[in-house]
Length: 233
Length: 233
DNA sequence: CCAAAAGTGTTCGAATTACACCCATGA
DNA sequence: TCATGGGTGTAATTCGAACACTTTTGG
Image (cartoon, rainbow over all chains, first blue to last red; front, side, top):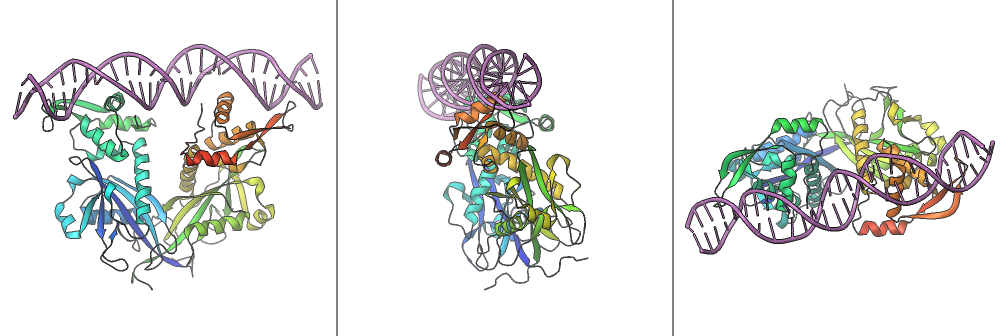
């Protein structure tokens, strides 16, 4: 049954701001690609695609992410809907931006190779088409806000990680330095980490203890309306 | 020039979560209306409409607000885009929710009368169609977040107001009690209010001093990245 | 033995919370 | 004179910020 006759119909797209973290380089990167269709063919762009007939917005975003990385992201959130009439010179397109946070190391490199996408450091982005720079800016703000209220970053680290790894990650997201002592004090006081007996000895001679997340504890805290704030110092 | 051929085209709507404040009743209300078209004709709904061919999303939201209230709202913000395929049983409609905050007293009562809309207390809402209840919930959260970082509420009060009025407003938005002394201490310490010699003597025998906003000072603080937080006590 | 990274506590100031009594006035 | 709502200050606590030295060990 179709109600609503004679109404304007619009092209609706989803654009994905895919943040990746590589714990070796300690930097947040963005997955960009060179447009293969007109207009603006050959220029740098976010990854996106049109929303199909019977496809929800989230499904469209997941489809695009999966195609480019082979991943289903745990952290994929809607950011904002961009609908100015002139934003895409090709036609009037309404675009919903999503952001996702993934671990670069998890990606199938072959897929990345084949799809012509490219990881670019957040600090040294090329010029982007249309309003994509604005999308990135807003998505980063969303990510930074999200990180304060949910243990987002934890999804990006391997099962075992050191407190140094964890701090590096938060520094990459916030894009600033954090005091080591204050960071440890705060994160440990939350009681969501379990210290293991094992040490990571690759990056230092002394070695750093591995930790592991206590997922039950996190779930428990969330239920109690726990406010996860790591914005120290 | 039209690029992008053979792509699905969608109905795109805007739904407005219009929050109103009445300083007499000290309550936030929502502007609802009874649907006059199928499906769900006769049921309560947010106010909305389809986005037209060459109309930006914000323009569509403003158009709807203006039609129903005669107002241009200073505070109208995009909330979230709802696009599940089955959300509207009439057809697949992608809807962008906006919220606005207006002063009920400013509205032309004749327009409200003619359009069949209705102010309903936020605490005693009727059942709403589709996913509109979810829209309201999210928009309220957005409003509460916005209020912490911008002097939103000020737009809702008349030129002259008492500190009691201002506190009532914030209590209505946060939906909780605030300690009188702490509230005053905080708001006065910001230096954005000017005390007048005049008193409001309607609600009390003693009378309460009127205040007025110092808009220049607010602009000045905003430029310095001022974080407007009134979440006291 | 020394370079390099991990690990650890304390102090200070600011901000937030809790809390109770006096004031002015019209009826 | 009394009921009603307006107005005020202080002490206790919590939270975040700043800050420097010791430990371990492989080379």
